[in-house]
Each structure stands twice: as C-alpha cells, then as structure tokens.
Length: 386
Image (tube, rainbow, N blue to C red):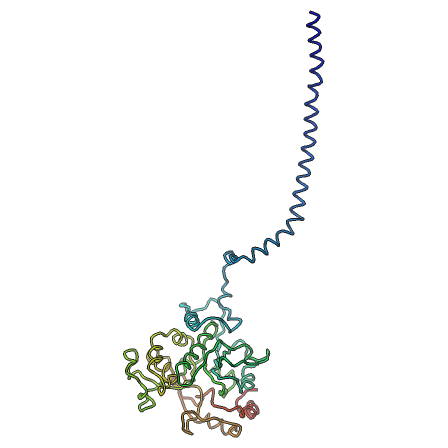
C-alpha cells in the first residue's frame, strides 16, 4: 500500500510541470504570430507604395509597345472624322483614294457647325509664278478656302512655312496635255479635296491663272449660285462632234457628245459624281485619244448626261482664243494695263441664277511670269486685292 501510494505521488509530481509547458508554448506562439502578422502588413505596405510604383510604368511601357493596343483604345469622336487631313501627302494609290473620296453622307444636315470652303485646285507643271498675287488674294480669309497643288512628280516646291502654298502638294503623277492622264490628275485633285468635309466648291486652276476680283466677291458669287460652272455645248464640225467615236455607245451617243473648257467650278455633289465614275471613264480612256482632247469632253459630256439641270453651261475663267492656234493667247508684261481688264469685264453678258449680268469671269489665263510685277502694281486699283 505504501508502495502504491509512493507511485501515485511520483506520478503526480511528474505530471504537474507538463501541464504548465503547453500554456507557455501557446503564449510564445501567439506572440510570434502577432509579430509575423505585423511584419507581413508592413511588407505589403512597402511593396505597394514603393516597389510597385516603379514597376507599373515599366509594365505600361511594355503594353503600349504591343501591337494589340488598338483593341483597347476609346472609340473615335466625331471630331476625328470631320477634321481635315493634317498632311496632304499619303500612301493611297488612285483606286484607294477615289474609293475613299466617294464616301458621302446620306443625311444632308450636319450635326456640327460647318463653314463651307472653296477648294482651289492648281494643276501645274512646276512652279507657281503667280503665287505672290494669290498670297494677297487669300490673305485675311483663313477658314474659307483650301489649297491643293498637283505638279509633276519630279518637281520639289520651296515655299516658306508662312506661305499659303506651304505643304499643299498632293501625291502626283505625270499629266500629259490632251490625254486621259490630264483628267486623271483632275480627279486626283478632286479626290484629295473631298477628304476635307468642309470643302463645298471646287475650282480648277493652272499656274498661269490669276483672280480678276478679290476673295470676298469670288466667295459670294460661287456660294450664292444655284449652278456649277462648267461649259458643256454641242458643237458641229471636226473639233466638236467630229471627235466622237461610235464605239462609245451606248453609254455615250453622238447626241450626248459635249465640248467645253477644261477649267471648271463645281459643287461637292458633282465632285463626288466625277470621282466615283466607273461608267464613262473606261469609254473615254479607250476611245477619246488625240486628236480627241479628252479634257475638253469627258466631264462635260458625263455631267451633261447625268445632271444637266445643275450646270450653268459656262466657265468662270477667261481665255483669249482670238489669236488662233491650238493654245489660247499668253499675256505678258506689256499687256497688263487697266484697259486690258476693262476689256475683259465688258467682253460678255451672261446669266447668273437666270438673271443677266456682266460679271461673267472670276479668273483669267494665260499669264506669263513677266506679267507678275505689273499685276501686283494694279492689284489694289483694278482687282480690288489690297
């Protein structure tokens, strides 16, 4: 009994210390856990606000360089669609350009404030000797006009940044007088000008053209007209109907055949019709070759067939054919006098919005470079260009 009691007492003495040990271990564990959590929170704070800030820009830079970034761009605003091209030079070929330019809104009202402009399209071989006169003509009328220049591809212009002609050249190709490449160049000018949604009227000019009135008169005359100005008349004889080729039927019959001046002014609707044409272009391209001078027949015949009621059937550009020959007279320094311009203004009576008027010409050609100096001297008194 004593032995058993001794065993029981020994066991009791050995068990009591072991019961205290888990309690101390638990306390130690809780302290360790608290320290660990504190360090974890501190580490997360440090990584988030110190290291991640340096990592994000690098990640963004990498993502921006990926080709798929456009998938996440915001949709284009209306402004991005109606803003005119910042640069006229582009990589579109003629087929792509004409297709792009033929896109036209079907709704006639604009959901933004649109100030209609005149597109002045210069079809040239190279330099613009009358540029100083045109600079004065355009001065002070920014926002009401656009300028486009089609020259020989080999020509490199050198206009200063202050010039209205600076960087106004379009991608060009060789244009030969009397051949379809001339009309193709004109379509190219129209197509590039159509890319600016604000261009409402389109005037074709050459490097030998000058304005006969100031900008305000020109803008008012064109913007208030109910018609576009393209000569289109039926002429008998070898230089009219004599140029017709019967292979152009049935798209173009002899009774449809028209002739007129190359130099025109048309509105936006007719410009779209010209650039989108795939019916008449192949016929004229194949069957109107020298001595059928296509630039005198293609647009004139096509628009006379499709929209005769929209044509004033006259040109706004004065030329003098009185000296005879294949080309009109060229005016030099000795021709530039007040009497010369008076003769032009009194040379014709015409219809404007179905009412008679003596203001029939807004432009004139052909002027040699030597005419520039006297033109600048008379610009204020005679042309109203200050």
